[in-house]
Length: 432
Image 1 (cartoon, helix red, strand yellow):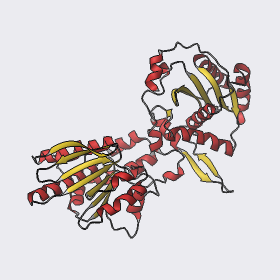
Image 2 (image 1 turned 180 degrees about the horizontal axis):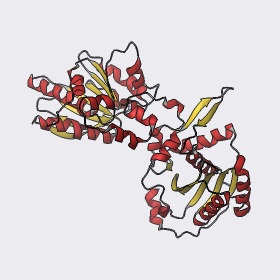
Image 3 (image 1 turned 60 degrees about the vertical axis):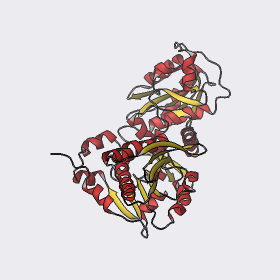
Image 4 (image 1 turned 30 degrees about the vertical axis):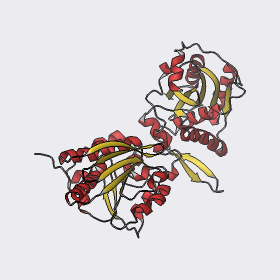
């Protein structure tokens, strides 16, 4: 049996001709494909009637703008065997617009969004993955006058990205002027989309991410200290590989544990202004002697200028021993008071926000970093909490936070050498 070109939920969306229309669709359900098809059908109808229709797609990035044109607009136009010219045209001082122009003067273009790009246009608009646009409230303020001319259409499509942003408001306001369409992965599969929901859920391996990305639920991202978007922006396939170590100065964070939690050692190498994770060592149910032996190995293999170790509770003894072995100028014991934990977590967050940290793209690390939540304490001061699970107790988070904090406190650290063979200086320049 031949698969349908459009599934019922896509046809329902296309049949809705409302001037203001919003779609909150699951990942992998064809929202950009469907919305660009609506724009193509509109310009083809206009061309046939001797009119001109113009559409602009505001995408979250230049790469997304190109993909919307190549995998959406151009694909549809070729399917209709329509004549068009594909161009790249200057739009702003530092922006290129991807454009398809039809013989009668109609066009569809796609650009990366920012508040300034939304001004000065008079087109039908598509806001693609709007919840993920940086400062989408400012973009909204700039673009609404664009569609004030009667007859112009506005399309807003996205997966959710937490509560409190403009997309959340559009999809939840009781007095919204938008015609709203919600398509979860379950809705799409029920309409015939061939997806293995159980397999996707297992692959995601994160209940909050699954609820947001596939079930279209607004997860309160404000409670998460590190949103997934922030974590993902600093992931690199080149991180977490000891063989990439190029001999630079290193910062170490170590979160001691006993019983069920993980002992984690994070090794970060300074490469220019960026800290690259070279190793993330995870030990479970090992003695303090074995934990200290692994720390000894790290201190030998890397040029460690400062190591920050969790001295709270059971960490008291191993930290004192580590200071004896490696010197109190290189090893710092950190007591986890609520205020100190906030300082450590802030050091990690600032590194991520500045894109000055590179971490390996591992699901367990991503989930661990996201598990730390911010709550208001009884005095009104914020405090950080993390649920204890079989995977640990945010142990990777705190090891990285300790290492990032050590980077900001290394002024009095001594010069040290390493026994590990170093790669060429060209490797340093590669990551600078």
